[in-house]
Amino acid sequence: MPMTERIFDVAICPRAGDALWEAFVPALPGLRVLGDSDLDAGARLAEAIVPHLAARLKQGLAIPEQPRAGCYLQAHGLVLWQFLCVRLGPLKAGQAAVEVIFPDIETLFDVDVIEGDEWLLDV
Image (cartoon, rainbow, N blue to C red; front, top):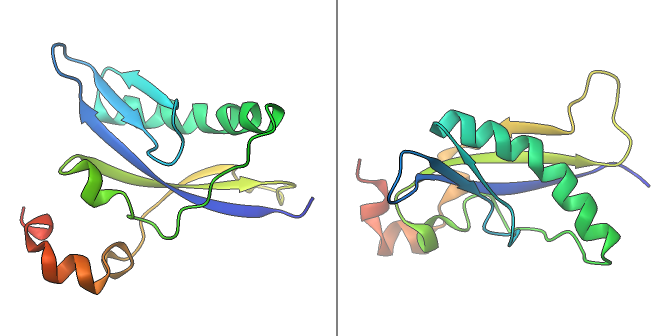
């Protein structure tokens, strides 16, 4: 099996009712983790994504592909975002299976989103 890469959006937000943070991947239903902080939740999710993908494959389910990084931003509103690059298949020496990446802002928004939803860019 050749090595392939998938980029996944990760949403990280405070959970209502307690002091925990929740991290989830919108493209992978059922993959949600909790952490004591935003960084802790993000790290736990990075550890959980490969076993989650392996379980999907074992169940005969495909690994979904997002059309582009940031495609879930509109649907989930203002939460913290990070992006994970997941490498599937044989890795080169020193190469990590999961890596946090930071794409250019231009790749996160297409023209329709910028023109129709300028509020997404307000901070």
